[in-house]
Length: 202
Image (tube, rainbow, N blue to C red; front, top):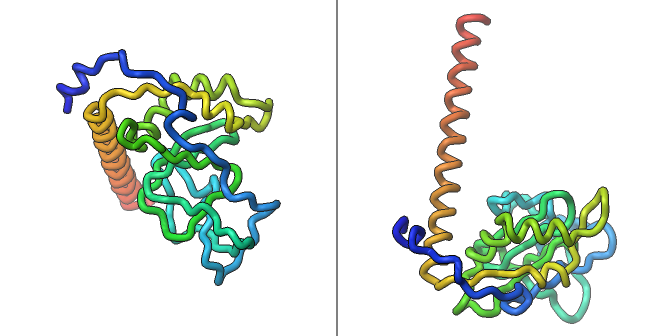
């Protein structure tokens, strides 16, 4: 994989996001989402997401939705994009629960040309500096920043060969695993030190 990374060139085709993916707003709830403990629809909200992904499927609120036409349910490999606030980022959904929608403060990005663009690579690219710089510049508002769908669709996306996209995805996965391992190690060491302090100084 490191060889592939080294030989990557910067001449990948450039295209706008809207040309390779559908972008739509989350389910149009009016006002606060009415929680229904016995409801059979799950809702992903901004608070349920981190840059690493969905926090916990079991903690999603449940509700009911009206209308004869059912919602466009979230699918495996859809991306959710946080378009409000000071931190705007994309999250790849990995096999979300059935009958799940997201709040209207999130955009759903569904890649339409999977033979050219891997969703995982797109999520990674949207979170990198070039796309983030454009999105920050196009955001509206002073206190509560917001990004319009039309601006998100204009983000320029580079499309290298699929093999290189897979290599980047694997590299990011490895980095995330190393980050989690280091975090666990630090937490364990701090727990040890706390136990030592309790024994010696308590």
